[in-house]
Length: 54
Image (cartoon, rainbow, N blue to C red):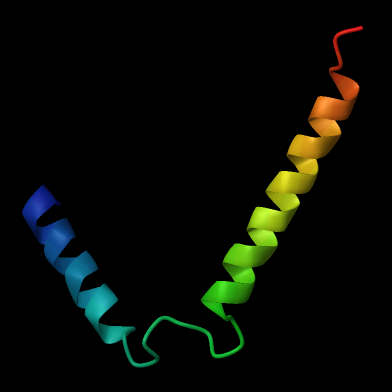
């Protein structure tokens, strides 16, 4: 199998699965991003509490 034929098959496979648009209805980007930001800030806060220079 050559690279070209493999790429053509993958393009065909990807184009067939595009019926739903790729986004899940229950995922809100603002809530997902905000939640990730809050979690990262919490991890940063915990890390800085454990790494105090005394």
